[in-house]
Image (cartoon, rainbow, N blue to C red; front, top):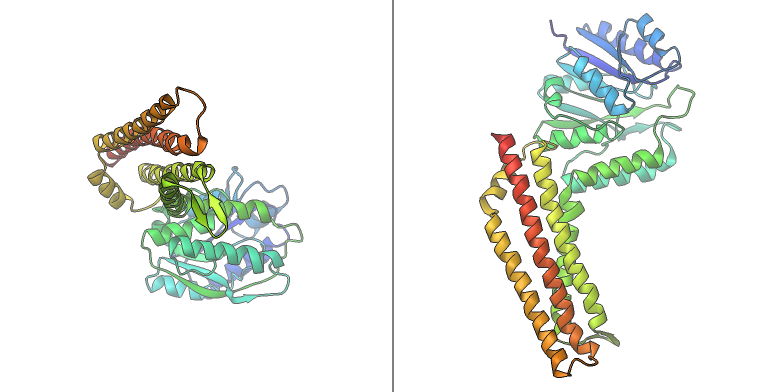
Length: 387
C-alpha cells in the first residue's frame, strides 16, 4: 500500500547532524498522523551515519555513485510515498515544519520549492559569497534563460509529486540536480510554487560538501547547456549581423567613424565574425535536435515538427552551392585583377576587397552543405525515435 509521504535525506558522513533531522522527521509524521516513511540515502559514509539511521527506524538505501543528484534520484525511486520531501542531513532545514509543503501538494501543486531568501537566513547559515553573489547571480541567470518565477533554484528543501518528477527523467548527478528539477518541471508545465523557509546553521561540525567554484560552475554549465538559445542562438545572431553589415560596408570602401578609419584589415575580422555567427546558429539547431532525440528536455515534439516541416536537405545544399559559386565569382574577379597587372605586385587595399569575401563565401558554402547533411542525419534519427 502506498504511503502518502516519503522524506528523502541524502547522507555522506553526517553522524553529528543526522540524529536531529531524523528525530524531527519522525516526530512530524507521528504528531500529524501522516502515513509516511523516512529514507536515508547513504552516499558512501565512513562514519556511524548508517548505524544511526538504522537505529532511528529510517529506511537506509545505499548509493555507491558519489553525487548529490545520484543520491536523491536513488531515494526518490525507492520511495513509496505519493509525495516526496527532500532535505539535507545537516539540520539546516526544519523537518518538524513540513505542513505548508504538504498542504500545497494536497491542493494540486506538483512541486513546492523552499525559498531561503524570502524567508530567513540565520547568521552563519550561508557563506557571504554564496548569499550575496553566487546564488543571486545564478538565480537571475536561470530566471532570464527559462522565464521561471522562482527565487531560489538551489534550495535543498522542496516537496513534489513523486510520479510527475520521475517522468522528467532527471539526469544531473551533482549539486545542479536541484536546478534541473525546477527547469524541467517548468518546461513540462508542472504546477510549481514557492514558500519562504528558514535556513539554520548546520550541525555537522565538518566542512560543507558544497564546493563554491566547482559547484557554481556546474550550475552555470547546466543552465547554458539546457538553454541553447542563450548559449548559441542569440550570440550567433549578433555576430552574424555584425559581420554581415560590417563586411558589406567595408567591401564598398573604407569606413570612417570620427577620426578612425576602418579598411580591409577590419574586413578580415568582420568576415570572421560572420562565419563564427553562422557556426553558433548551426550549433543551436544541432543542440536542439540532439536534446529532442535524446529526450533531454520535455515537450520537444513541437520543435521537431516545425523543423521537419521547413527543413529540406536539398534546399540547404542548393543554398550552400549558391554561396560557393558566389565565392568562385569573387575569386575569378581577383584573379582577373591580378592578370591586369601582369601577375605582378598587387595593391592589397584593392585585391583584399575581392579575396576576403571570396574566401568567406567559399568557407560559408561548405559550412552550409556540411551542416545541412548533419542536420538531416539528426532529423532522420529523431524520426526513428518518435516512431
